Image 1 (cartoon, rainbow, N blue to C red):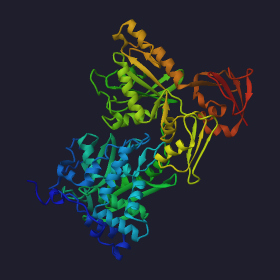
Image 2: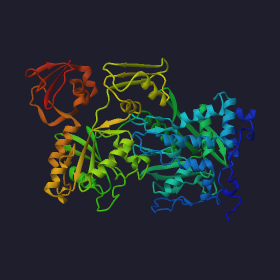
Image 3: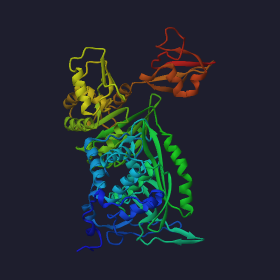
Image 4: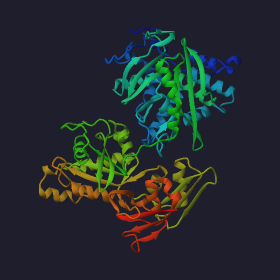
Length: 629
């Protein structure tokens, strides 16, 4: 039987508001003492050496040996504790890479709510509520506090790019990877879970410097450790983490610091001197946590590097840099082992693991295809499986990357094309991706007040004001402007409200070397389909021409004054963005400020050349000479 001093002693963990002491005047005037009180109230904290054991490995010098995992053992009975159980349920709801749009579905929202409700039945969170209310940082009931926490921790925001890709909870508790670096990530439960599934590689614990040339090696019994590791292949050279603490303790601590606007706090916990840093920022009227760091204050080479680069890293994150490759992005989506990697290798020369068994590609492999002077990014995505939209395999991550693509290649096995086609379309539809459809011409914008204002420029045969109000009410939207410029259906309106995206797709039917001519004739009748053999490179010309057509690209050639046009390096634009102004901006945004006029030769010109302004619409293979002021 397990030691009763361990996790079994804490099998029941709930508390009520009356079980928790009111904050003292001394605690109200000193946030450090308040955090110490949270520590005392953390009854669900695990016991080192009983509930868990660590591998105390310290790399010395250029030691390149591979250590064992950080966690030797964690008692499975910890899952009897509600906050741990509901925290575990959140770990597969996020994509660590920044810049990839994320969508929170109804099931995930319920998981978030269950976790918060469980936390609010514990001592640390109830004390945090009392403390924040006494300080005037929160108002209302415990339910109001829960709603406020839901917004702070689980509402998505834009960290990198133009779509929502991050949340405060994801950043602080789960960690993220951006620009090749691991960010935040201070939660030991996440570390343990990711280490078990191979997403984290523990490298070494870091000794604590105590004085001149003296270091204290960790014993494995501490609740605060310094360590280095790799997450999703990205290095984290120095990190400080609690070990054994409950989810509610960390949630309460960070929530208090955030709501009280304490950006830099010094506390002493478990004989460890800690600096806790919270960096908030505002976006769309909401305040979020964009960066959280924890560090033991004793300095050594690793901590100096870590603290010295923190502000620079934060500034870069707040800049939302997006590294873009090529003029468009194509994602290869398909079941495992249908030939995606072979096709990519032949098109781009980029090696992506190829073998005659499933799940060879486990991560996204990028490459660049050069065609008609355009550089087009190609992404070989891991094989999709049925149930991907619900989280099976790494389906959520695969589909989320697919949402960022300009064009999707659905690579299908020609021996069973319609079966696979239907399944993949269902998975993509379930994640808000509409293939080969035009977006409904509906203007929709939420507002603060004024009710529902509906207008239409065409007769509506499927919708009226009451139906529109009923649909919006389901989404708890009671104030919005809606303008219909098409005869829309209820499904069209829902697509717009939920922000679903519309992407062209080509069905690439691979392995035609395994079918007859008669069967090939039937394959050609499938809309948007191009039959190929990646192995033999059959019909690649048609595939590339269809790609160019669906991407809707045009080439514009430059002509310096007094010289011949440069046909070797065209400026490639999407045809929806092909005015002279767009052409100038694609070269350098400063050109427009000095622009006087342009001379254009080609099919868009009324005569050769034509003198035009910034609004002139260009056509494929036009030649442009810019004249500056």
